[in-house]
Length: 565
Ligand code: ADP
Ligand code: MG
Image (cartoon, rainbow, N blue to C red; front, top):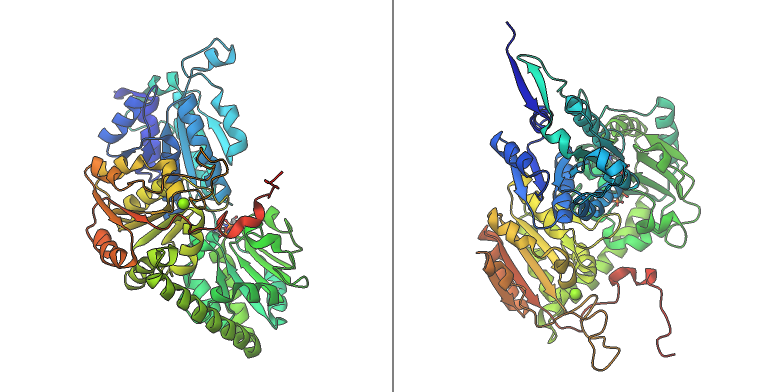
């Protein structure tokens, strides 16, 4: 006789997540998902409880980026869901695979607008902010719902998926005959490989072969795709210089002689053939337009999403597919031609690199002795530490902190730097840092501006509760951009924050370590010690409040008004 047992929707959801190799959940519990989280823990999943949903969903997104499996986030209904929605949208913009699961009200109450505790039509609200939204209305559909979410998050251009989980479905019981799979299965080949045609490869080779001044731009898509081996071979074979976008740093070591990072303007404006590898010609690359780019440049783009081609510039050689499949065809095809970047171009870049590196070194040196303690003095010890310990991870946000840190801190290993991403958004730092520590087990440095830290500073409690080896560095210049601009005599200016704030005490409140530094010499001693303690800690780095440029390096995006009128 068949042995029958009952399973709830919650049971089936856990079955389905586990069947697909998803082991961690990042979330905030409450009605109606509390018992679901308890059950997940009892059934062997790891649950990480946060203080606010956006940080939890950011964490899941970072987990997805680092592991090529969708990160899983959990929130309560309406407000919890809405708090998570920003992070779901960010993950989708960043092309990070993520499944955000939110408990929701029962359909009949919502659909007749009867008014419910935290009642909202979440499924329809989520749609514009993610790759796809699904709602599972019957417990028996749980396996299919998760399969669909996994497939959607990972296939093609990765992104965020919303899974709506009505309260009644969580507890709904279905009969499962022993040995039956109850519709739970592992998705087969969730991100199928796609290679471009021979014709497309030939076209690209022809364009590249004609290049006098070729340039490779590496984006975070290449980091996500884990294509470092083939990208390194491409550059080594052809000597084509490369520029890494911030999260692509380390795909090829920043120390590599082919890096044109220190000659960014020259290489972008000079290049006659630009090879985009997992990078979009969006605002961060001035939409591929002159004067940043040479108006006659030809573009070769390696990209999984065909509609990305021609989004800003004519793409002369589109190569659609997943990067490793494209590169597996392109690299040998180029090798056959024995193409090498012309030495005149390489020499011009090298001369500019040498010039700029020398200038930069002077600036850093001055930062060590400057009477006013600023960004360069504060960040030099971090730069040095990462040179010696390239396997540590760096998460960074803040305007000036982000911009100056990006130029200063070299990365030698792929996916070791996470930052504000495609939207340039603040408030992702601690969530990203938590997931990075959880997923990699390595020490993580969260390098934060004082304003950026404010968005999710309470996650320090989360960091301490899970005893994560995270050093939060708060570069405190007392404000958004800086802390000195007062417009009206007796009121703090709009950009002003507390320049005397003792952010480090937040760590102490939760059992972590607190450090305060206000000079280069102190930072030099404290930073390495703090990271190596492998304990949760905050270093409050009090720099001069006059340090910091309005909007960092993107001041041109901030409309200027005549404030004297
Ligand atoms: P960055 O901000 O570093 O320039 P973007 O996020 O703008 O990078 O671009 C990343 C691009 O990589 C996106 O257009 C995305 O579709 C693409 N991408 C992501 N994963 C893959 C993959 N496996 N193969 C090919 N392209 C990918
Ligand atoms: Mg600041």
